[in-house]
Image: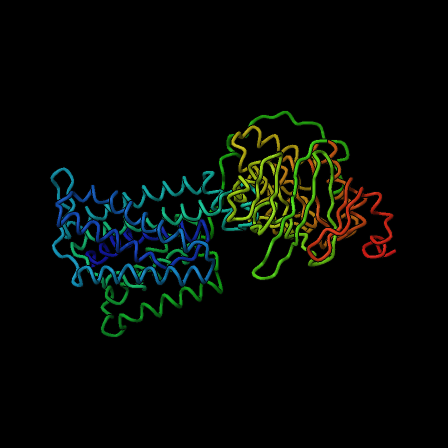
Length: 309
Length: 249
């Protein structure tokens, strides 16, 4: 039982990273993208191939995976981010499938026995679950704080404006295209990092893991926890992972088929949209820091004709 | 007076339909220029063309002597069509039709967004105080979500947001749209103050012809994609054709 809980915490951590990336794209900038499984796939494959074929250390593959996934995100983003709403959704859905198909054609059985990550001579094997939990969650926390900083910076403010009203954002001097592509690239890169941990933990990658359902699940985490809320999406990752493993956890897998998960994800999306569209925790309140460094400025006398209010 | 904005024989098409057929206009620095016309005359299209939201098929737009809008595939014009955000950087602020406020942000956050191009927090703070002095209702509502403001308050906020970047040229698209006559009067009064006290050049597009002409120095009349009349605003107010078509006299 404890073993199983540990497993859920590890997967929740990996998916929390994915959800943080998706949150940057969907929560901050308001782009409905459904190809996070593709970036996840790229990250996993980069780690698998570099570790196994080139014998690189796991740590070195993380930045490479982030750059590779981010670069693909950038390439995909340049043509597709002109699209909006459901059109963007369909385009990215297709691209996620393309990435998976490329992976299948590359090597249909994937890669097995990927070397484990090690730190100062300690090897993070599948048995040392607590150690792996620590490893993953350190990264989750680091990315959580990085994105929290981002959301409350000038860039975050611009993304928020782009999400609310593109025309108004442009008129205020915000380069909408640049910020959209930037946010998509960044979100994709974090998805790639999540892929590294998946490869390092399971020591095997195969294209069957990175289906469309993974993208839906990640979107579900973001919607459930609260779009644009860093804490919310991590909570969402936990809840969804717990629901996924619920039948196995309580020995009900003979009664509840695995496919029931998909029904549950759909149900969560529908129920949330009706009763709590802002998610469990709601959107994070934006504070841009100007408030804190409030400067003492002498109050200038009211201009003539204050105006009727 | 120096010429600020020069629109030279521009045409704009939506697909196969040409919406503007060769418009030429001039906006002089320090004045208030109004453009009146009926629904669908192409007034909003002209403003969108100025800020680079729709591409030109012919002609050019020059701001303070340098071209900002040229047709997409022309090389000989010697300029490049600037994207909207770069045009904003030059000091042209647009208050879009229907206001386009950031509804889920508070009034203060909206004003912060208006100052996106201003990097100095002290300047932003000072501009905000000025706006709260100028539009006291915004000061009273600074912590409220913009969604909860009335139409007139939202319009004032949209104008204040545009002024946050200290623009040289303020473009207003139907500032009186859907507002009560008293509020419209108030808003036009504010527009005059912005022009007279801060020296901001104003170019406003309006269906309310009387209000627009009374509060401007120069007026243009647009009909189905063409400028049909242009004169000093006082002259247009007594022009027979304008009186008949737009003033209902």
